[in-house]
Length: 598
Image 1 (cartoon, rainbow, N blue to C red):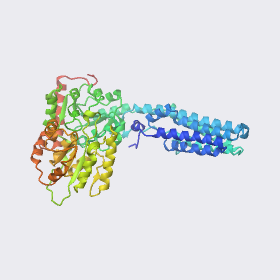
Image 2: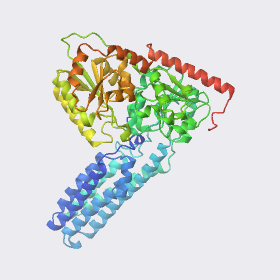
Image 3: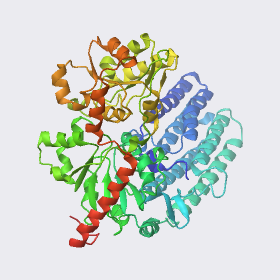
């Protein structure tokens, strides 16, 4: 499959624009120094870092190109500024235009403008090419006219002829421009004009190739092929996913379930930025960025659509009549997001156990309780039960806190306030610590980001089996099996960990009275609570390693949160079958063409 696509990095920010600003400024300062000292070589040397950066970083994310244009730092403008600065320096160091042959300067100015024109044309046509590609449906694991992944980016017109792309070739032509200017400053006859001629011819050839390839050449349209391939697949089950770039984890937690679905299944993603992190999913996948694309890849065969996230773009799928729509979430917890009134949008809401149904009933915000089905947590099929420990075994503590949420009401994270002290306390007790932060930890609050970094360094230095758990789809559940006890915040991590029936602790950083805290967050009712002073941590660790007095309470709570003990994957797959049957029954009573919108 292609290693990268321009669309998939379009929203990834970096500091390239600031670097370019500094390097172009260096070229301008070098020209000023050259004018003062009379050393044209200084201007040439000062321009080289900016040119080198353009050779290394040819293709920029669209967001950076936009910023660059506003700062007059797009590729063509950078070339014009730095080469123009050197021209001024060369002319100025001669103290008079008579010092450098006029013909040399005119020829080199033509060369500068030739490179600038070629870069401008190449940039404009490349941008148009990227815009056209951004409307193309991407696919993976789907047979589209014999290709299982695509579409590939259109090849660079210059690379068809040479082992280099057009924009890098233009950067190399700029080296000739600078060399010609240096020769002109040294009063070397003829060679500056020869260099300029080579640059103009080279730039003209690039413009011709780019225009023939991107300006007039056919632009591939694979949308109809993808539509036909999806129709042939005839998916009955769709996993629909939309999220900001930082939210890919919400789909990856369903990877094992998606791969296990027995019916024809399609993963429908709205943003290509997620693709690079979805290798664990082997089912056919399409990326449909626009509503028009969405309609093409939802054939009449689709009976049910499952939604791991609750975002605005879900509306674009829910409005398609015919299938039944179900919110499955990406974790079951006492967080406010787990019982949002927005879930009224869906035909059904699937939750892990009875506890989730009670949450909806308690808030009483218009959710039809008959639409809620307790289906278990299929991802927990491989979670191992607690095993007897030997007294000589080292205790392994998993610290898996949540992140700080999008707003203060949803901030249950202990990382900034307590994280370092929790880890240090566990290490001081002789335990090994596994640290598994939420992927978004530090996304909103800088203190959380700093604390996360400090904890990672602390755990890495500790040795003794302590480590930072890697960020991959199954890493958390692997850490569950490795750990003897969990320390976490109010989150779905608690619910999932209870499948192991192992001891756990829940942070209470705001020091809410225990009874009030447990009433507000039932998932903590069988936990040791850790207040902000962590006074109870040593005792909790000792009890987890020994008598474990809360085990009976955990057994009952696990059934309340996760449902009756059974094979969770098999049970979930049966629920999908039953859901398809309900969709078929509804369609038989009131058939609606798939193209009709609600």
